[in-house]
Length: 410
Image 1 (cartoon, rainbow, N blue to C red):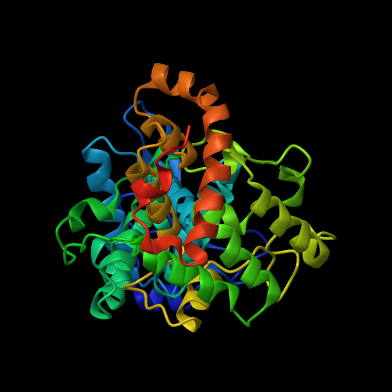
Image 2 (image 1 turned 180 degrees about the horizontal axis):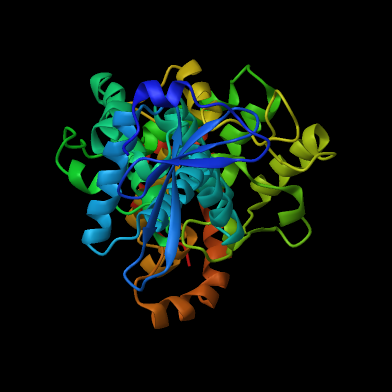
């Protein structure tokens, strides 16, 4: 006889658990402590008898239990084992609980670090994660919908920071591709967001390229009255024209002042190849001065807050602003464009030597392998000529055309 609510309410516990049948395999298990648990007995397609737990009464009413029974029987009719499906769902819920976007992103970033990605890039990805923590950090990575991702990056677009919005979205896509590869998500929601954000404006690093104005800038830098190590970073930047991140992360262990060379490890380079920087006498002199300021620590240009951390990525740019140069006039990255332009205009140095000095990656693998070791002698001479040329601009020689300065040079 089918069960009724009134019949269930009068059931009393016994010394041993006992069953009270409803119909179509559904029954109630009454336990000694007084629990009343819904169970479904069924047979699989191969005839094996199995049981499926449906919940406890009264949280699961008689009607609810019958609905769950009917759904399970419908699954069986379609060749799906409801007990196995429930096991997979519980496993997925457990996986999702352990694999939030934040947890998966941290795992992805740690893999980046193990793979030898440049520390500056790793730190940038950690920064992107911090931007996303509040919006989707605690959400199971396998449940995040495209609209949630869009909501997380839209505030940056609204603030007219299209580059930040696009790069944050790009990071989300990287995390999801990692999650898919590790069977933690089935799809990448960022694929459905292509074209959703305003197009990025081309990013140009402002730079001073006219010799006379370069001289003015160098004189302004020499008059900088902020932190002494920041002044050294400003003075050192045009001499070596490395990327700002490479400059900030310079370590004393990488620099050989006797040999006048700075060897930047491949892990810190954008092109993933070690980069040797010849040091002019002016650069060596600056580093010897800096050693008196920071030589007892790891970094040549440490943070003013902690010597265990490199200088902030905004320090040099902030110093340029303090000197009166806006972001549309000059940036820390602009020292590279300055060197590239004036060295090429000089006509004295081969384009390949200049490109190697800038650590631009050659797309031709065979050619790149050759150029890693080529042009060193020329680059050493070029580094000293460049430092001397900057000195000449600083004292006002910029009024003389650059070709005239070079006439008669060997």
